[in-house]
Length: 390
Image (cartoon, rainbow, N blue to C red; front, side):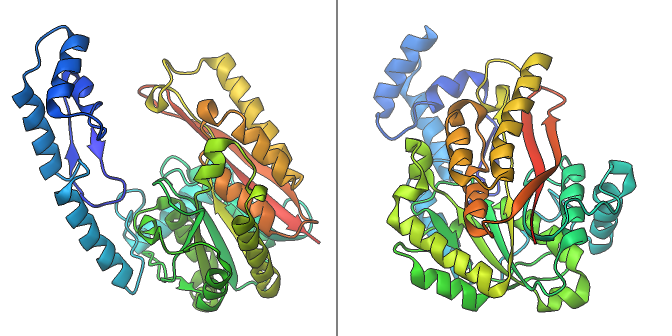
């Protein structure tokens, strides 16, 4: 099944397995005639050119092929999003309840509630919470981890905190290392205003275009889910004063090459400006970040067995130990070292959190979990980590 995570099309395309060798060659480097010939050799049966042409045309018309119809549709939707006054809650009614009462009940009972083993009043390490790593897996599967994360925030959130830096993974490719969004985030529980002054200060410090990848914000769930839980946690009165700084972290070039972001002057300048805002606003930094993605869904030949799951637990915790010590470079090196096999998608926002918060802070892993797909055994691991400063 093909789906467009950026929402240019809301439809899905279900493909028979026998056409996969054909579609896999729709990469912009071969003609339909060349694809028919190579697919014929691979499959051992003749694939007519008109079959390839028909398949390509159908996918192009459905906006699943990068061609004129897709580009026209994307340009139209990009303009509409750029002009929109609000970043709408695009996953409400799917990844979580769109009804405010049902959503409130779900968060209180199934996430923060005692049935899921949340912290139940345990404030954790002493000190004020200055940073938080929370999952960005959907709240249905990540209920317990979200509950522990946001219960930790509730127990140690400074009373005067009004600014929240939201760092998220961009699951769509980015041209620049970071992208900002000046729009308030809508949630079924009410909106969260954007801190325009801080966002503009960050944009002014950038040596790259901080809005080149603005469209990635439209359907990116890693920030949306944090906005939902944060809005619930703050309640009506406090949410009216609160403001967010939404940032998607790409750092794709550095992740691809395995090099530290410290080698980029543009990224260092961005972090310097971000630290200044955190200090000036006494902001709390929240990273929506999952850890490993392993198993058949993510390209592995088979599901992990129990021994491999224990090894994965150990690897994830070794990475988190670097984060707890606020050793950003050791964390980057450790995660980047097996990025092709462990596929930690939260590297960018977690590293950025470590670079942004009080360097004297220390972290505490409040919860770690491996969510296993019940049908084919693939795993997404995630954690709740609080960072505390005196």
